[in-house]
Image (cartoon, rainbow, N blue to C red):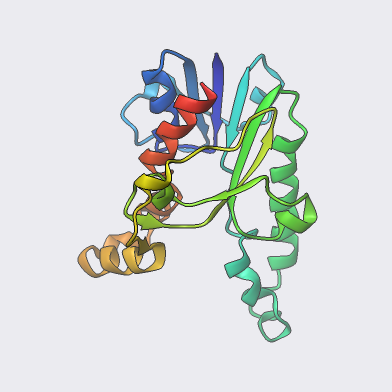
Length: 202
């Protein structure tokens, strides 16, 4: 299949599909860190969504969509962050680019947040530890012409590390984690989930 993995600089999902023989490409406005620039389209994704793809997997930025950001929209922070409401609307609009993309099979990923009410309830909520990873991080999937990901209950990690705890551990060891490095690490898809996507949707 021709696969577009939007808003992915890590190339984790792209490489998982490539390993299965698919023509997969990552896309982001920044350069990739996954080691395969020949599979990376560094550009705005808008025009690409009109091209001939069989499958779209999109990871739109969650900065203004996640439920953990709701605190900053309270009245007491209005003067400090006057642009937040518009930034959220812009984020919703960008999310909807993927919703409306004319691609037959689609998966849109985001943390638990406002899109479950602004768009629709997610088709599935997963976590990396369901697939054997050490991390726990609840993630929503909105699916079009794709089945929910199946995971083997015997492989669920019984003692997962909450993502916030993992982040604190890394911050204590690497001061740079709070900057761009940390942003990239937080947005990286679990290898375990990427492999499940490639195996089941590929």
